[in-house]
Image 1 (cartoon, helix red, strand yellow):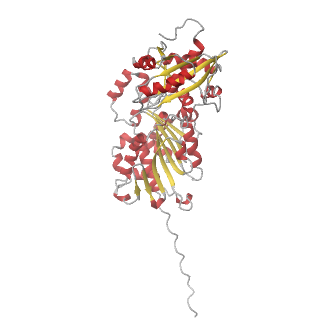
Image 2 (cartoon, rainbow, N blue to C red):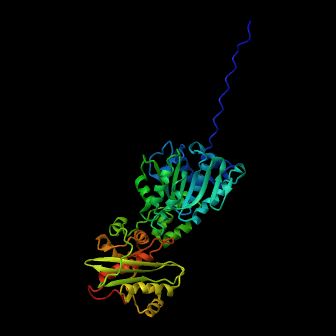
Image 3 (tube, rainbow, N blue to C red):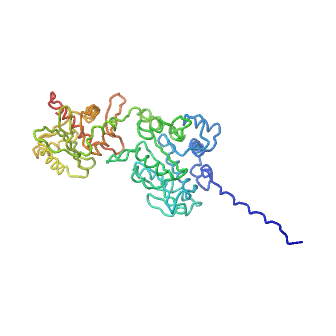
Length: 485
């Protein structure tokens, strides 16, 4: 007989690598399990993670899902974007860090990165200080023994994972820093409190609009927007309005109180907060958007009265000008000046000046005086809270300083109908536009309204001076001079 022709058995295909789920890494004591030892206190968060990543729910978990989303059933395939409206101290930061650690460590993004391209996992916050809380958790998770050596480069704000071509970074909420990158995941922290910068260029809508195109080339790229709620405006509120309770929405909106997400939060403290200020507590701990705060002036109304490309108007012979100053001691707030005049039934803004701190108040008054004299102005009106020094310093330059009897809330209230009826013309000043559009109307418990800039380091120095000058220009000489004392 001839040689044996017995065929060699075909080699078995290599087994597919086991893909650890986010639940696996949370349950494993050698991975991220130590951060979630008290499983009961994290139960609602694990329901969220199951829904987000497409895992089935049991009956108890389904009830939690329905309570927090107002949907009837979860999507079997999960979601790529989520808006988390969660009360303070509800555990958002640790969960965002967990998601970042999982996506960076156990997802392979290299098939979507070309030619050594780096994929970016960005943590966006109002400022880097806020974002570092998440980064602190994240560093701890990526430093466990099983992941030793994963981080190949570390700075105060960036972690690089060279083997996966991934960079994790803390970023301020700026659309400029996002453009030009390939983003595999974006985690937006306390988004309801993002505000436009001094240039007016970074409202939350612009930042999110910059993120989404940067994710287009990466299948499975994820976007998380998480915050305790604030007023009924901005991207977080719009996501809530469009997608909350909608079974067919691709974006998952999860709304839950502090105690729902963190049962270990002290009930006595939250009760005390509700007793002290029910409206604020309902937002901060009950995760309800505030109905007592609303945008004061719409962007559309402001844009309609801006003269594009006009940054200042020269003095006109024979014209009466009016000036308003918002003084400052020079250490924290800007000192601002605005000059306006009346043309028929309209008030025209002619000039704006701002001195940013730190500065010498005497030097700024001297500079302002030169401008005031160029417009033929011998008296100005200003804030009553600056004390006596504005009187004394302007008097040295031959200018009388009068104290406004109207607080800035009243000035803004008088300015609103002028803007809405196109009764004013504004200069093309980005800071002025941003400050006017960020103004908020707040209703106090007694029912009285106040108008001011939003909390958290925002300013309205330029807007205050401009409102004063424009209202002066439309008020003085129309009747009794009751504008100043």
